Image (cartoon, rainbow, N blue to C red; front, side, top):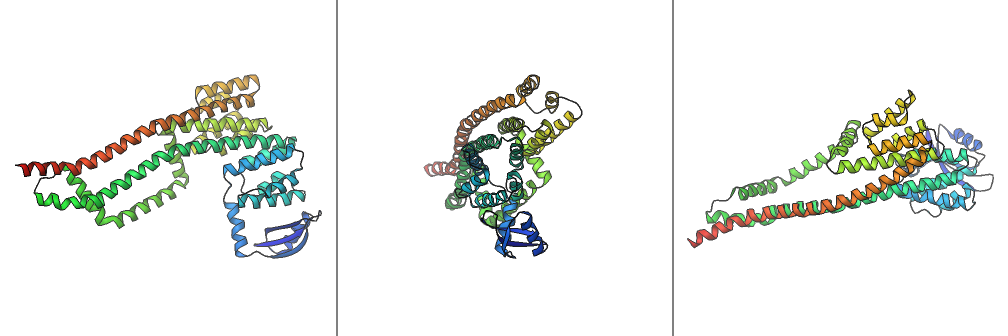
Length: 403
C-alpha cells in the first residue's frame, strides 16, 4: 500500500486536493470515480504529506475547538445554509490548522455525496460520540438541534476542565517554588555557614547536621539525582500509558482525599449529560450506554457502565443496574428511577447533569479555599525548619563567646 496525493475536480467545478492510501494509481482512480470526481493529477505523496496525514489521524482535536465547530455548524444550519456550504464557510474561519484541514476535506467529500457523519469518521480526529450523534441527527432530520446540543455539552466539558486546571495552578506553583527555595538554600546558602560552624567547635543540633549531610549529598550527586528523577518520570509515564497503569491511576483518582469526591461528581455529571444528549437524539438506551462508557474518562467506571448495559440486556431495569454498580450517589439513582417511571429519562438526566455541574463548581471553589491555607502552612513549615536549622547553631556560638 502507498499514499498518493491527488487533485481532482467535482461536478460543480470545485477543485479537491487530498491524499489517499491505495495499492496503486488504479485504486485512486477507482475511488475518484466512485465520488464522481474528475482526476487532474495523481502522484505519490511526499514524506511531509504522509507525515501530516497520519499525524492528523493519530490525535484528536481538543474540546474547545470541537465546541466552536459545533456551535458554528449549528448557527449556519439554523440560518438555512446547506451543510456543504456551511462546512466550506467554517473551514475558512477556523484558527486551528488541523481542524481547518479536516473540515475542508469533509466539505469536499460532502459535496460529492458522502454523508456528513461518514466524512467525519474518515478523518479520524473527531470523538466517536460526536460522529454517532451527527449520524443520528442526519437520520432524524434534527442535525441543527444535535450540533447545538453537542456545542453546549463540549462547552460545559471545557469549562469544567478549565476550572479544575485553574484550581491546581496555585498549589503546583507553590510546590515548585518551595522545592526550588529548599534546593537553593541547601546547595548555595548552607555551605557558607558550614565552615563557620566547624571552626567554632559548637556541637551541631541534629536538624542542622541532617541538613548539612543532605547538602553534601545533593552537591556531590546532583547529576545522578537528575538522571534518576528523569528515569523515574519516564517509566511512570510509560506505566500510566499501559492498561494496568491506567487502571491504577483511575483507581487512585477515586480514592484520594477531597480529589476523589470531586472526580466522582465530574464522572456523574459527564454520565448524566452524555446520556441525556444521546437519548434526546433518539439513540436507544443500550447503544447510549455503550457510548457513555467510552467517554466517561475512567476505566473503572467504564467497566461498571458496561456491567449496567449487560444487566439491562438480561432483563434488569436501569435503576436497579445503576444501584448495583455501587458507585453513583443515591440522588442520581433516585433521579434515574423518576426518569424511568415517568418515561422522561432524557429530561430528568439533563436536569441531574445541571445539578452535578453546580456541585462540581462548588467543589472546585471549596478545593481552592482549602488548598490555599494548606499551601501557606506548608511554606511556613518549610521555611521555619530551614531557618531553625541554620540559626540554632548561631545562638549556641553566641552563648559560647559570652562565656
